[in-house]
Length: 150
Image (tube, rainbow, N blue to C red):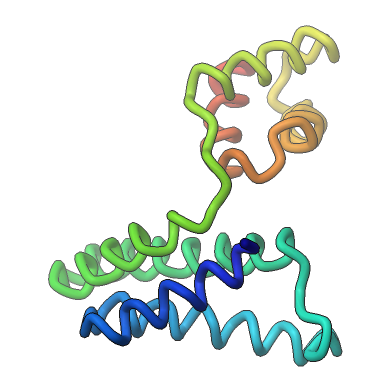
């Protein structure tokens, strides 16, 4: 089952069971996917699984940003709603790497390149993200790179 099929299936279940927040969150993701299909001219054949995962990541990033803004504005109720939506959506990402695995990859890339300065960060990030792919958030990888370069 592709990621998009899984989203549609879970949306149907949420609709039948009356889980309004989950239903609304999944409808939002479904809408983002359909909009991307239309903009790419792929409405008939659909998006690849990798493209759907990129959309899911974008949706998570949007919700994290919103949550942060709500918290800084003193709106904990809205921040909690965004955080709950993130939990629903993260299920559709590939299994994420642990911090130790990320640090091991970053360490290997740093040793391979001989990088020692913060100016080498872009090169290390690029190589590490090629190896890590969708299995970790870029901000987590960036923090690991900063630890090795400082």
